[in-house]
Length: 438
Ligand code: XUL
Ligand code: CO
Image (cartoon, rainbow, N blue to C red; front, side, top):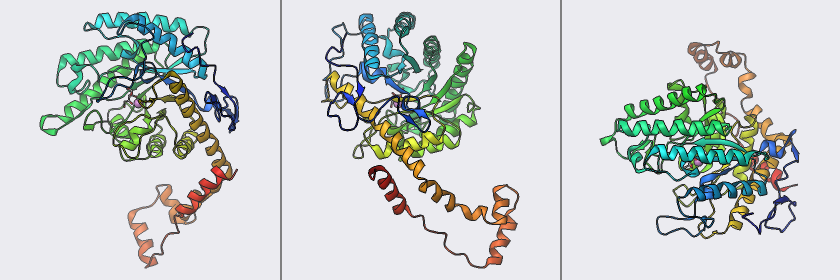
């Protein structure tokens, strides 16, 4: 046992003062006909949870994640597996997500790295047996290695491009081997700093080629899950190609990838793009491409990706309304989140996951209340009723009218009244009433 002082985390209810207990996440509680644990398929992020130690631009790490092993050793890689499984089991988390280089130290020679990946994935498979823990998704880290300084799929260098291909191929192999449900592309350095040195068209086409070849290879080796693009507008690049949900959807449609790809929407990425989290969820959802969520939150005062554990219950409530409307997610909720640098103990990391899981549980419970209350839905139906209540409006919805016919309707009417009120403040007060009025 690694976390000797941490018990199995149980649901104790809203009145509990036990820091190591769920207050709202009650896995077997039935909400809208499904268990909470089925609505909320949570995943542990390998990188933040088992790897990140609080290192930032101004100082070294504050958290000890060495497990008493030598840095960059396979012993450490295995200790991370042991710790990860104990961590997930204690929290009742059923999934994990990984980058290739989270699992093993990367060698200069890709053959050595690949061998290590074979070894560690055998070890993980062994660990999975006898547990109900599964792989949610895998991905290739094509942004940390210096060779990717000008991008991976978008690189200017053919050799680098082939190394990106080799990494994606191997990451897909490992994902399939571990039974992963999805495969993510986050375009870490797929973007540019200045147009002066960038052929945008060539770069975008090469990214599409990489994704198309990955799709074809994945299907060839029996990968049945979804591929995901994870949009982000900036950081590390000034301008990233997968700016937001709408941009990524346009790209996928333009390159005939929209049948195999969906989106993995990260809250903090949406807010960096100047959107709300729920905006990007909605855009993905109405296009049939909301697949997965990277659950975290940003800070209103900071303009970068802070990857905080979700705490904002309003945001989680709006997000869960989108998820429920979408009929759930194929790709679950990955906590792409880390504790703040001074929260440097393992106990802090457990408490962070408890916070995140409780926040989404509250979001789900509130979304259920809002749906059952019905006033929001009723308002929305009435808001657009003038189309359905008008013969010509019905023709429009059925795509059976013309610009001339609609124009002559207006000309005959001569003047136009204002549409009815948007009633935002009334609707917001309903949210508060439903959330806090019992
Ligand atoms: C970076 C980020 C990544 C992806 C996977 O902002 O979100 O961790 O989720 O590469
Ligand atoms: Co992410």
